[in-house]
Length: 369
View 1: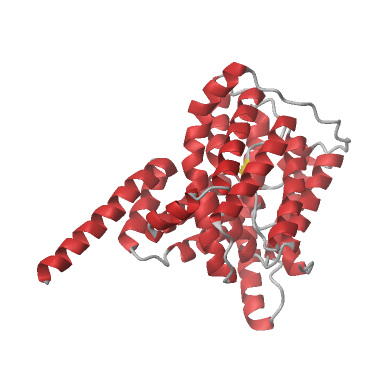
View 2 (view 1 turned 135 degrees about the vertical axis):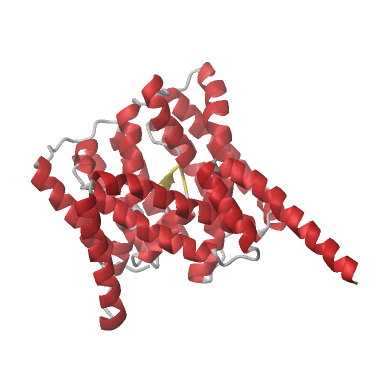
């Protein structure tokens, strides 16, 4: 465990994904963003201590996107979100204690997992475009800072503090534009008890789309990326267990469904995170924001262009690792399909394509023999 400036810089590496999703969900639903931040902070610290690696936490993206999209047409209630989190918590806690992931690891080709990684990288590029259009000036400033640190790190052997400087520039820019946000202490959390009807609607609307994405990206792709980056094996079943526990203990008190994520791991590593110390830094930042600030106002003053810059370079890191595949055709096909359709569709069709190409390859070899 280290607590250097590099770890602090790395702790901010996934903020470009986490902050926009939390803000958007809080704006369109009746969830309190401060409780969402509080449980993110608690579980960031726990995972840092448990894994001793910068294993990230992220909002469950499929649920977040559906909640945001539904905000324009009536919205999804806190009860439905809590019901989805509880069901997913049970599902992944059970999967973590069985042999499910041993079977998955045996039958899901590496090219499919790499394709999910590539799809996520392309989605990060797509997400960054919205920030660039809204705030091109601070996007350029963010890119300039990151490139400058890349050169300095390579030729002057200094830690990469680009994420700290980028977030700092965005925060200062926001203060100049919007002023200083107010302080307010967080009230005690209230228990969110889903109604019976919430479970049925949440299962079809939120749980089913999220399950495949969590298995493919938050568990399988994250486990594979830890081997790439740290030469350490974090078993998928262990990641599944912590996902189950964090949701069962958070969503009943106003938290948002959480998971790990290969994109977040790539982002934290890209900006300097190498140990669980980065997670403890991130957790402390989120807890301070939750306890002492009106979080939506604090987070929303950050100039969004700098978040776009962070997303671009995280996407580059992610795509670089995704191309270490045993079938470039399958990986690229899945990555493109994930962008034009969905992660779930890309995973299912990609599995079919991978096995079909494998079968055709074996037939071709047998004919030659």
